[in-house]
Length: 181
Image (cartoon, rainbow, N blue to C red; front, side, top):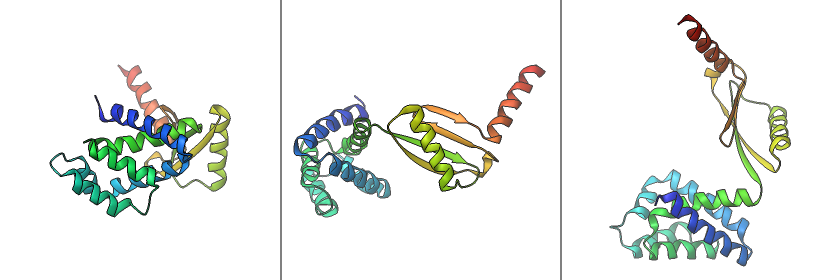
């Protein structure tokens, strides 16, 4: 079974527990902190995943890093996962928890990549259009890629809309290559 599949199962259990304890939002924030911390410190992720390192040592490390920064339910969950020998799926579980949270709260993540930085007004227009099309709340991440020349590429889930000059040029190139053959 893949880490994401196992992580999704643990995340489901954690979100159910969080609902019982009325701390769903708090634990989502904790999971985002955990994800961010592991991304910034790949060594920590490696230690938690390493089956050779003693569970007691892993728990001590988790306490040192997270004890006063996360909810008691979160730290207890982390310790339980380590005790069960599931340190390698902690990251996937945190990631899947955030995904489940977003599904429950009808939050959709979107990314817009443009040739130059978008103005706040342009970002608001894009958010409003995406929300109108799909409903719910949209969390927009804006990126800049000068190679697009102009326009933008909007990605929502697995759907992508490319209005960039580069995208149009590539499309024309394919069309010309098809007619030249």
